[in-house]
Length: 159
Image 1: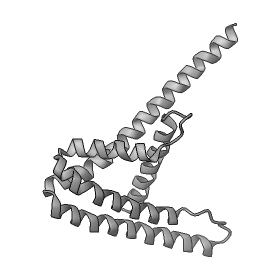
Image 2: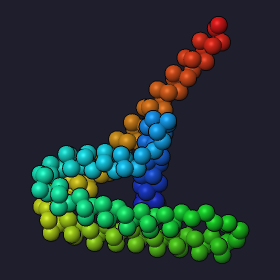
Image 3: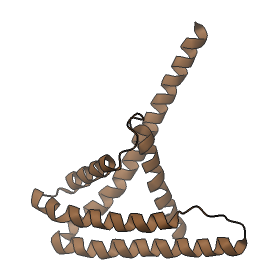
Image 4: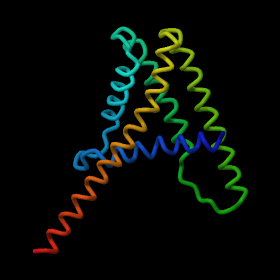
């Protein structure tokens, strides 16, 4: 169960990293744009009205900010030199993941006070779908760029 969570969180952030790579490199990653794309996607897919979106999005952003701070605390660079240090880091990661789940649970309950359960469920599922969509889109962009680079390399060799 924990391995699945770790895998999901890893894939989530890998998709984010690949999404970053798929965006225009001159502009770099734009976290605001990514967040706006995510919000637009989940709101549209869950079928929220403007009134529902206005009530939901501030809470959603608040949840994401809290989760991000826990996640970032979990990924500080450390010098792993001993089993004791590794054990401590594993326990801290587990505690942080539990804390992130508690934050989600707290905010899911808040969402349920302002939205029907069916829409909250759709929002949760569509957020997962967006990360998969972003991951696949980034892979396609990487493949397209790789193929373009190969064609350019072949043209340069043939000259």
